[in-house]
Image (cartoon, rainbow, N blue to C red; front, side, top):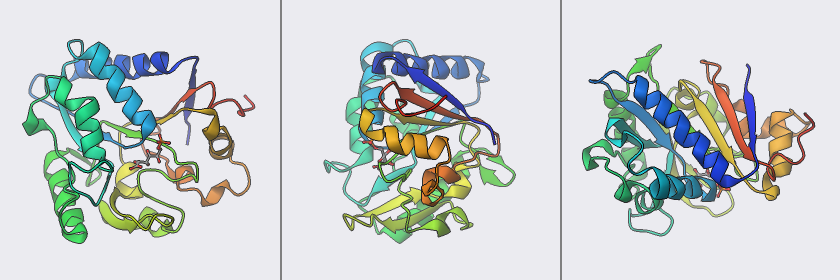
Length: 243
Ligand code: 6PG
């Protein structure tokens, strides 16, 4: 499993690189096709979304995107904790993407029922590869404890389940969430980690360099079958990497 690591001297440069990837990929999309993008929550994602909103609202073919979420907190869409609210306010309401192209996880509904319904929605909307929906691009953050999406260290079963989305409880805050599973994440065509800040340097070096103890981190189990895994880091997050 190969991956590439790109280190940026500024958040702006990292965001510009994400924009360039979207522009390049969208230019290749056939006229009657869509590009399926799955978003994570978190502050790194929010920065990228805001930057794209401020600088690329009229430079990206937003109408070619279908937007989904990797995970969602089980709250209403207007809650401060909502990943949908964060993405909508920082990006989606500011760019010309049709509302019909935005598929939020309904955090306000019964979690088990919504995990099933969202799995069915993704299955119906996202083209499959090897019988599993395959997102064109999945953006992931990295928690300080090595979690990704809402897959925390106490749920290794989320990398062996046959389901696409499952209900979890965040171990520390006891917050219910709905998350994509390893099966879905690792079937993506491209997976990009976006990790910034010196406070992430330790976990980044543990995961990328396979340091002892990191094997329990969910992030170490992200290995898209396509082989296309990219770490997008700022100099702070990359500061403990040897190479
Ligand atoms: C969530 C996210 C989560 C996030 C990481 C990184 O719902 O909280 O999906 O996986 O991406 O915790 O968050 P930061 O960028 O804020 O560190």
